[in-house]
Image (tube, rainbow, N blue to C red; front, side, top):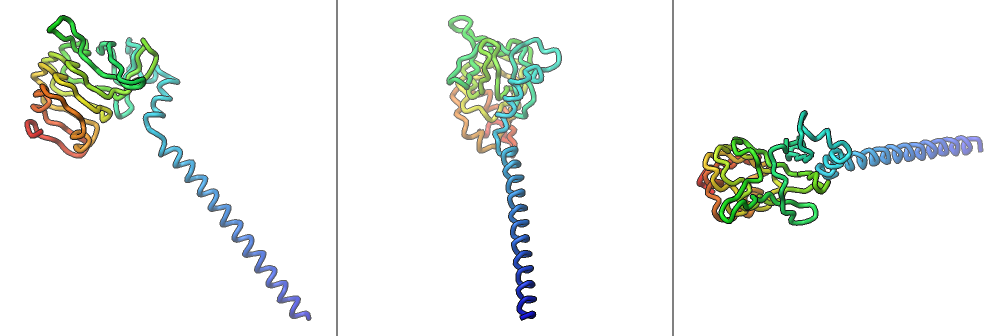
Length: 217
């Protein structure tokens, strides 16, 4: 009888130990899962959503020091683009998209969306906030004559948000030799590029995973 009681106590102790081990393991798994979920929330959220949220909360943080323009542009890297030289004229294609389009000055002459015609390098922002609307717009189209007759332009950086480049987008940009594209070669090849864009064909396209030589496009 005494031996049975001892055995029962031992079995009970073992069972208690097993139960405690199971509870501890489950707690650790839950904590790990919660931590992973928190990490997933941090890492899988859309990068630009967080950038735009911050820009909306503190717009001055997304201007260059001394920037007078109230319009803010953001590069694909999340850094601000100085919008002082950008003409605030646009043709929104959707509520949250924008086309950079050259403005017709006369029946035959177009003005570039960029005010400074002596510019040599341009970074096209992936997002623009316009003071006239107070809204953010995603730049998806480089429109017709967008950078008309910028004869000194040698390089341009294009974000991977661009879906199409309309005809004569870089009309008269005779010095353009390099295009830096913030995306892969495959993504670049998916962009719809209209006719009359010889300036693009004459430039080397530098992508994130390699380059496309001039005239090989």
